Length: 412
Image 1 (cartoon, rainbow, N blue to C red):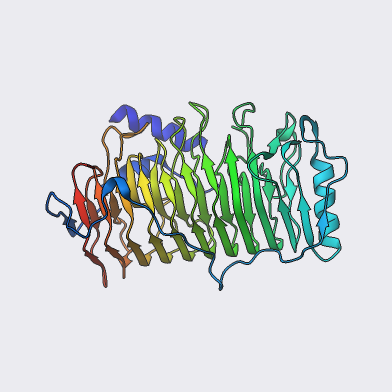
Image 2 (cartoon, rainbow, N blue to C red):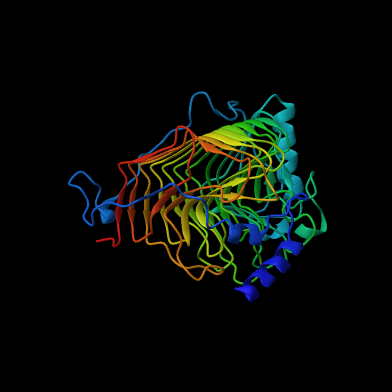
């Protein structure tokens, strides 16, 4: 244990997120929250329970009150962009995005093929960037790290405070397998970064070879929908903090119908995240996702700093294969509260030990440890199905409820 803590301290000194250290020591110590209830149920499922091997989640749609994305219909095609995985197409694609916005809005279309970019594509207001499917690949080129994005990081695509934006039907590849992404600013912008924008849709976007978080709503983004998309973390021994879909200091959005696999390599971290550093996270729905969290993390983490996380719904998701299912964590001496969290109808199964964790953790663990003034209130954990994934825990707090959950030691 002492060796592990020393190692985690060294990692914590090396990795900061905009000056806010995501300490793995705190993460380790926070695995032991104060618990008022440890729910167990009979060893067999009730007759109304969903069988473990036949579970299927509900399909959700972006909320009317949330994002609609770009609505313009005029089409723009990048001139001189060549999908041959050989030439730098940044200028051609960026010019088309700029032209579409200057014309009042439009759709920039890309055919199948691989488009290299040595720059960082910035979306503009009222523009949709649309590929032809996963075979349309926008890939970080060999000189990608020689420049930075507008906020000091290395996004393949950033919304950069644009309004009414859609990114759809393509693959964004950060080339973390070929490049050495352990550089200054690695965690200040993200592979696909919805940065400080309003009314943003990400639909059917795949991310590959990340060296940072994959798809992120950050910097106060509001009215967003991340839908039908997929992330993968495949590297081994190169990076840490490779989260899948991450909501950071943002609010009023949907993360729905996505497939997140952070455990293909050894470097994957949390699958889904709600995270506060510079502002609260609230009014976000995580629903209908299929998530395998990484060796270093959880299926979903509610990561609290000095701002609160509230009015979060976690519904009809499947979590599996990571050391922990859904849990809270407190970072950087955070004092934020957790309030009005709904965790319902999730299927959590077959959790496994990870890179840092010698034992498998709990299916759901909503607790605050020794956090002093921090509180967890009005949180409900109901109607979840758990098998081969430990137990469910909920800290004491006003309005907290835990009921009608099914827990089984084996998945049959």
